[in-house]
Length: 459
Image (cartoon, rainbow, N blue to C red; front, side, top):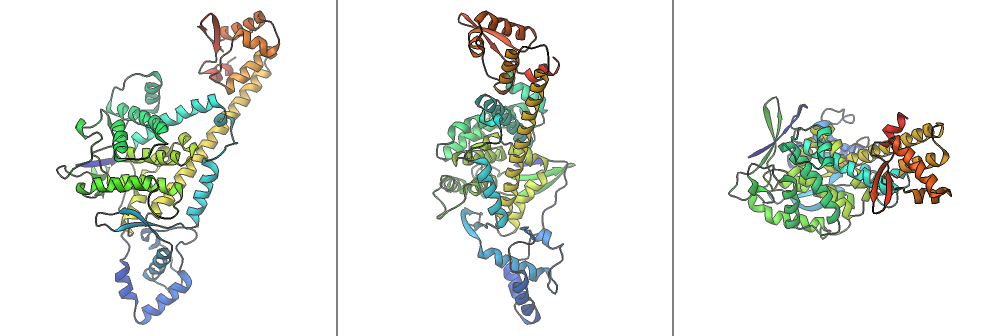
């Protein structure tokens, strides 16, 4: 069985770096040994110009004067080994994955600590409860769509958003994938304080794959030795390139138990930055590929769960998959760099830190646009002679509180006018399409329509 990731981008497997034990033998005599000693003097550092480069990139760069690429690479790898930490994740041969924390990782995690946890003061859109909840729904829908598109869903954004908002049932497999993802993301919010278990992972997998698998029995079920093991392929123009063969199925139950211990903070000993833990968890599930399908969506769901569990609350508003979908080849290559360079997970960690920071930047850009939009519309309303001062104040409040409710009594009380004058204000706004009336009990309540900003532009 194989999973294919269709893409317009071309993809090549990175060149595997020279084996260090072979290099050591080749470079440990005569002139090579003298050059190696010089390499340690001038090139003994894990990065070059701040970049944690793979051999596939390094071999095209100019090495320090007098050194071969092999001398240069050997010195770099030795410097990296000095800062490497083992993870409880192993490959099929039980060899440990490692990670390092170069300056770029320290800077990235520090920025995410500042921006994605604790208090936020940058935008009323997020600090205001009603606008926050509305934006959260938008973010969850966007993440559901792009995460599904990464695995082949082809429905347009407009159709998918209309389906989720209207509550209609999905009509295609692609729509079902997107709706499943949305439901799973909503579920993760309620699971963030629970510990991860194999049963919980299987529950999430069932949610993201419900009604989309060739065999419905595969939902929430680990592959077994009797199954044809899934492979990961990259397809373009009907040509397939094998990217990854996951560990044997008989290892999966033990590997999943180890992954849950890691996710819950029981492993490894010592401090592991929470963001790095979430990124490694994403990689781990994707590397093991324990299910027949839906592994990528489940892996990204676990990343969100881990970040929320560790109090990075802003992550709910980020659409990580939107960034990944813009460069799927880079996403795939970040996995391949790890596998081809002696299980060094630093490549994937650094890539994912950039993705998170880019998602935060896009969120901030969006929030700024929304606040600028509100301010422009408010200025238009204030300069209009068609509204009295009380109505202008109400419209400003409604723009910032789209879930607000107004009554003749509350409006009159807010502006120290009698209830009848308040009722006339509200009815006038209703007649212009700027409020919607609903009778609750014996009292009329007025609500802002969902498209209030659009309506105000035409007033």
